[in-house]
Image 1 (tube, one colour):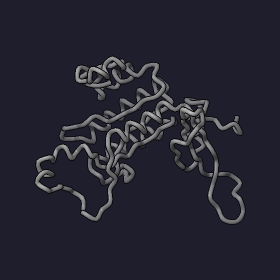
Image 2 (tube, helix red, strand yellow; image 1 turned 90 degrees about the vertical axis):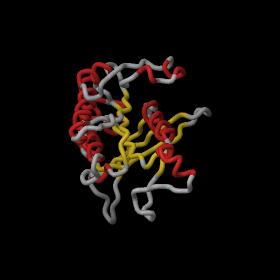
Image 3 (cartoon, helix red, strand yellow; image 1 turned 30 degrees about the horizontal axis):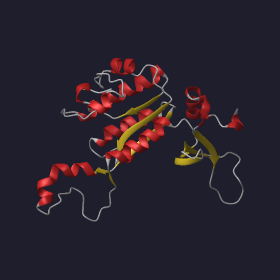
Image 4 (cartoon, rainbow, N blue to C red; image 1 turned 180 degrees about the vertical axis):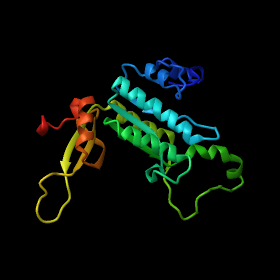
Length: 226
């Protein structure tokens, strides 16, 4: 889905089914994602006077598509700062998309990207003069990423249908009656035929959300619960 399919590189154009879509148009997004089982979503850039309203509209589109088409896996390109949920300017819009997708009960991965190396292309003249302009304090650490970094993680997550759920907890003394944490592993098969752990994350167990997730993706149900 993109606004201008003609802008695709020729070597890419022959490998994809490009659909012209306005991501703010929920009907169009839902129609374009029919029969899709995995979705990579990027909220469109906004230049309006009310960017948070635009992010809300884009969020409505992806939520509609996931719900109507029962899309079981979503990778959302978010940003560092979205974890704050509030007080990060336009990034609050990405936080809204994150929370909306989290409430869908499907398998969601949020990629909270740092500063893009490619942004340096906008400062080439300054860099040649020996100057790097920054907004944050010099001593504040921040991750830097390249688009390829994101593409590789996103592709791995979208293409891998091998997801393993485990139950666990941390405690001192007596073992708790119910395990309150869930650990999800994404596995990939290498050329040698062996499986490797590509990524994992820990979250607090939410029984209602888990039951909804299992409806969309029955394969995620642990063997012990079948």
